[in-house]
Amino acid sequence: MLGQVAVTAGIDFGAASFLGAYLNLQFGFEVTPGRTILLFAAILILHGLLNTFGVGIVAVLNNVSVWWHVVGVAVIVGALTFVPDSHQSASYVFTEFVNNTGWGSGFYVVMIGLLMAQYTFTGYDASAHMTEETHDAAVAGPRGIVQSIWTSWIAGFVLLLGFTFAIQSYEGALNSPTGAPPAQILLDALGATTGKLLLLVVIGAQLFCGMASVTANSRMIYAFSRDGALPFSRVWHTVSPRTRTPVAAVWLAALGALALGLPYLINVTAYAAVTSIAVIGLYIAYVIPTLLRLLRGDDFVRGPWHLGRWSRPIGIVAVTWVGVITVLFILPQVSPVTWESFNYAPLAVLVVLGFAAVWWLVSARHWFLKPAAPVHKRTTTGGTTD
Image 1: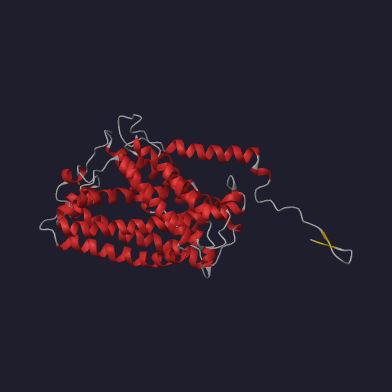
Image 2: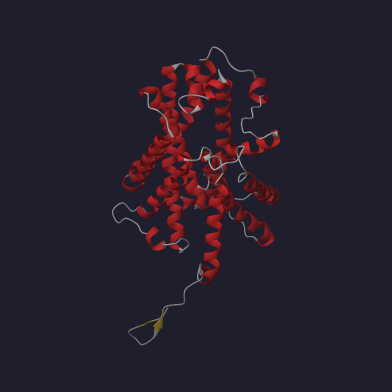
């Protein structure tokens, strides 16, 4: 749940940053932390309302989203490839190294820089959360997970190449008055009009993604609450009789995301912290079934979709890697470490893990997922039924 809430926060915070950049360009909107948080809150409210009242609209928008992302990436990369008068060299794109973190170790900077790549490979658990609403879920769910990974890899890599080759001025993009360096790259490479139009494409993709994240998050909260796995579960697994949606779960997801983003008002590394929380939370959750499957060994009963002989070696690599990144992404992002630059990811993760551990030891281990005693009802003939 922590990872899902943080992913929603990361997506919509990114959308707020890019929307602020567009408003700055179009209307002279001054980008400040306070205004970015207001935009962030407005986007979360929009996504909460769509998931509360617009179930049919959400379904349509999810279908539009697929094509928006595919066509949008193609249009942006095409424009960045053919429109600019000059491009960076391949050696610049693949070998240029810039360290603005304050840390002296290049290796350390590369390792903490893996956060953005790892963050990209999250969210595929949405396929699992939506399986109850999917035909042939035992195959469609895992297939959706695998397909989302390789399509994200290809689309993400192509998009990064397009943006990096099109950088006209690294310092100019870094210190952009818009507050969003990618927005400045679009403007420098394509001109004001085309740059702003493609910036809208990016914002649209982020809004689609954030809406879907709230949907998946709310379904997860609802499913966990049916088993009593969350505090106040009776509240979170209620369903609106009119819209048939878990309204309380939707707003828990939205408000939880807002809470994780609020430290940006005083902490300049808040976005990195939110993405760290998302990656750590989700990947701990992702790898637990893999670890249990490895411990089960040959006694594990496979489903209709599996990795065959590659299951064990891939599982070992996955468990090891998650252990590495769990430590890596709670480390400081910048130096010197102050209250304004402190990576608060370990605090959020430890609070949630600590709460879960205490709740388990004190209460939940006595009842969670244990079948209730049969309820005996007397029949009209004097017998009993269970």
